[in-house]
Picture 1 (tube, one colour):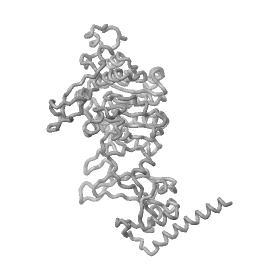
Picture 2 (spheres, one colour):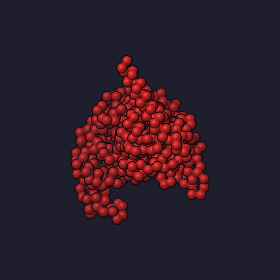
Picture 3 (cartoon, one colour):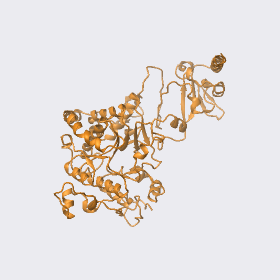
Picture 4 (cartoon, one colour):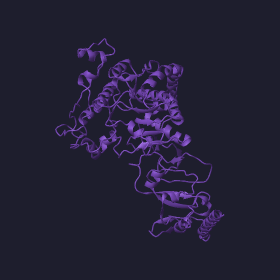
Length: 533
């Protein structure tokens, strides 16, 4: 009985406090006014017409908010030390009388609240993230619940605001609708995939069962044009003592399959779906060969996901310092309950907002949400074709599935130096020096943000991460064995001894890029740039 009385008294106290606060505003007009708090900061007043969705407002520390309600977004490069703002309806106002007395919601904010106190009466909370754009307005109104942001922009200062896409900037947009040619091309590719899917799964299933360790498979895909990077990853891993038994390579041509198997990797070559993909290397990001190979990146992951395995997907321009699976499979990891984990790309453009996830290194826990995500991505090949980017389409899908199905995606912060890549290599000399001097040991390094294969090779040689013998560069297995007194007719002959170095091949190429040793005598790749050391 005493407990019931306590609860009743508590509710009465809360109701009285709210009534007292709200009654102070009866003398104030419904027109928006500005008052001043003790810090002389302008405080907005919410009139009675907004009471259905904005009876009060409070500040919370952004860092506390982000850590408590972690939606997986990268923090570095997006947020400064400003607060987050919470708007309340009557029933969601924090219940403590002393809080009400201090905040006076209807008149503004008088202190920053603890995150738990600020949200104690929230049954749901919609979060809107805005960038610091010039002259940007944020409109909130009562109506049917929406989980999308409707955007309005003007192409010049004198024209009226017009409905636009989220990628709109003036007369340009980052997101173009696939045209008829894109759609028809994708239909043809998808038709072939659907016709062959039962046979492909029947062939792949026993291979996946053999490779998987702890229900996890490391997935790579590669063509002959990028084979040196694949071979370096393997030789690099062997030299450092890493286990490569649970790696499954999806080569897109026979020559790459033979090279991968010659290095001891398990492969699956899907000739029905991959035979028309290019054999040569892409000359730069976004060219036709680059875009064509994006299809292989979609299919290999979708197949392994469909078979029910957790997976780590990585591009072949990745090297390991520590086995990354130790991070993702550690149940004590503070982010263990996310569905997917991505390396932070570093880019903060609207194309990749808000996740900025790099599609060249990510880990996926197998569940119905992630399986359907990759199925949806398979259907979106026309978007990939139009955008010239697998990354852009994948982020778009993850944004939608996070909202629609509750998919949880974590982007691993770029400043922690656990999963660095090209952004750090080209933009953060201080962080790269720590890696070069072995003051920190990341899990991996991904040579992203680099124009072509030739530069990736040179950068890795400078970093002391190149373990592939020159005589195995850009050659088929038969030629390598023939040139090393091996039996080029023996399909089981190993390439490890002739191709893999026990110590890295360190070469200087550019003085202005990170290097294991000083390269001050080399020319800069970027004109006028000083030496890294």
